[in-house]
Each structure stands twice: as structure tokens, then as C-alpha cells.
Length: 352
Figure 1 (tube, rainbow, N blue to C red):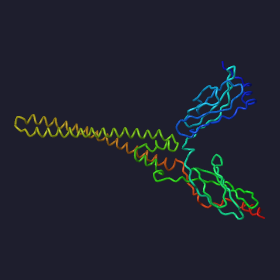
Figure 2: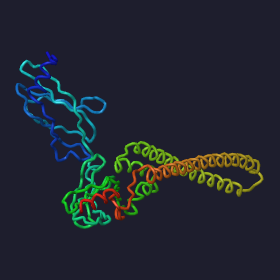
Figure 3: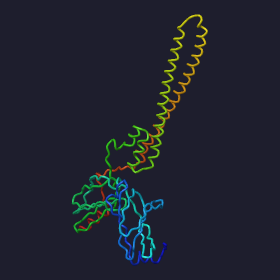
């Protein structure tokens, strides 16, 4: 029988044991495909075994295991989860731990190729050196370089950052500038700049389906498949009607040829039969002509629907490519006066 003991739970986890943060150890944690990751923790005194649980954003348990070890392997796709490692004591009581976040990040987000970017600023009088510091949107310092020049090259993946420069004066104190924005331009070829639109030009819906994994926008995939399916069905219906129209034309021509052949037989005794036959043939020819016209009309309607879907999905791909997808646009080579006037004054004051 499992019982929940609040006092013992707190006693084990917080007061005596000091239950540590769970460590995620895996070389494949940033890949897009599901990979094996390891959840590890420190050994807890008096614990006979542990119960490891992982739940997704819908609060559904996606992994559950009891173990006597202090490490378990889990296979999960990228996403946000919650994890906890609970203690099982000698009496088989489970002392549940608190849930803590577990996020597995896609490789395309965290392992983007880095690019060397030049940074340049105005020279500060009496400065002996400079330190360039750059942090990302999570306020994490991603680069810190020292130089005696007023220009430097730093490797960074595309994205938005904050930058500042420390100036060192003769007193060896560093005076920081204010933070300013830095947005790295991602250089793209012609095909990369228009990759979604080009695919939509080639086949309806391909651009949307392509953009879903490429730019981590799964919302584009369903409507891409809708464009593809409707276009394929209508295209098949168009060719079916085209084939049926060709058959009607052949039958019409064959019937007309038979009528001409019969009329050349001549003879007074055949006039009445010939007139009746010609009347019958004319009715048949008119019926086939009307049927062929209906088939042609259906084919034209299918073709018009295909062109309409093609136009809609192409406009949709243009919207995705040039308006919806995040853009990186800035000139990082521009000379930037990173130091406000009062910092410049302080630097002079330190000199005297």
C-alpha cells in the first residue's frame, strides 16, 4: 500500500538530504529526432529505490520507471516537459518530490552555424584597451573579448543580442557603456531567400509543408497538405474528363462516318430507311455532342479550381516568406558611438 507522508517527505528531501537538482546528461539532447537522454541525481540516504516520472505539457505521463540506480535513460523528442524523482523507503512508502521543468531543444535552434561579424566604434581618448561584451536575449553572456584596437571580429550565430564596451583608462579601471542592440544579419543565397515561394511555384502546398520543419512552424503543415490534396484530386479529375472528352469525340466521328457510308448506298427502296436512319443518327450525334460539352465544362471548372487553389497557396507562401517568418536585418559593420557623453567625461576625469 502506498501512503503519502508529508513530514517524512520534507524530512528526506529538504532538511536532511538536501535533494539536488536533476542533471541532464546527453550528447544528443539538441537533436530534432528523439534521442536517449540521461536523468541523474545524487544518492539519498535511506532510499531503497526511486521512482522517475516525466510528463508532457498536457500533464500526461510519458515516462515512468522505478530503479535502484541514480540514473535512468529516457528517449524523448524535443519539447517542454516536467520531471520528478521520488523516494521509495523501506516501508514501500513513496515520498513524492516537486515537479521541475525539463526542456529538450531542437538542434536547428541551438546549433546554428556561427558567422564572423566585424564591430567598430569610435576611439576614446586616453583609453588603453577595450572589452566587448555581448549577451543574448536570455541575458546570458555569449562573448567577451579584449582588444586595444577600436575594431574586433566576433563569431555569433544569427539572432538578436545586446552589446556594450568597457573602456580601460590609465587607472586600469574599466568603465562600461550602456547596452545597445545588435542584430546579426543571416546571409542567404537567392534560393534561400525565396525557398518557400519557389517550392509553392513548383507544386501547390510544397512550400507550406517545407516551411513547417525548416522554420519550426508546424502550423503551416496542415494547410500545405490541404493544398496538395485538393490540387492532386482536381488534377486527376481534370485529366479524367479530358480522357472522357477524347472518347466522346472518337465515338462522334465514328458515328458520323457510318452515316455518310450508309447514305452512299443509293437505291429508291432504301430512301425511307435512309431517312429514318439519318434522323436516328442526328439524334445520337446531338446527344453525344451535348455530353461532350458537359464533360468539357466539368474539365474547365476543374482547371479553374486548380488555378484558384494554386493562386491562393502561392499568395499564402508569399505571406509566409516575406511577412510571417522572422527577419534578421541590421548593419553590424556600421561605426557605432557606444559611449554616452557622461562616460566620455568620466574617462577624462580619471586621467587627471
